[in-house]
Length: 185
Image 1 (cartoon, rainbow, N blue to C red):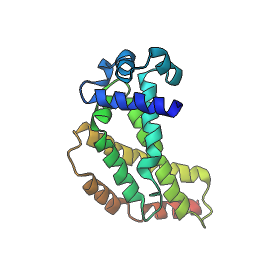
Image 2 (cartoon, rainbow, N blue to C red):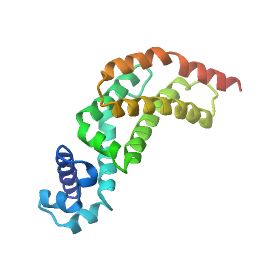
Image 3 (cartoon, rainbow, N blue to C red):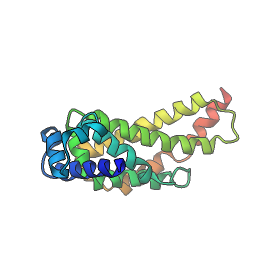
């Protein structure tokens, strides 16, 4: 029952975002749309930003799916772009609001998890420390998220597949080289 209520609140917020910006939506607007009371909302979420974060967190795993290997990371990253595009109003309104950090943190978390899977796969037989693997993932995470945020900021006009293709050309073989360099240090 709790998940059903949370999903209803999330659906209501997403629907409202197609009509007005996040900072113009109130808890009362959401609960009225769901025919729930404010107490029910606050039982599940601290505030609207907490609801936004829950939406991103619960949908993240579904977005990337099993695309967490060297051969499939491009598909996972492309699916992340597609998710943001499908939820355009949510992404743009969150990005333009005071809770921009929520969107950025979501992208960082999902991208880091994707990259760590690829790095761990590549480093399977290499004596590279976990700290060095995290450093490599952090480096690429910032580049990937920066590209995506620039794409959001510019109105999501560029084809995500073209961005991922160019990114793949740029970094092909670089993660393996980075791991080899850390192996020697």
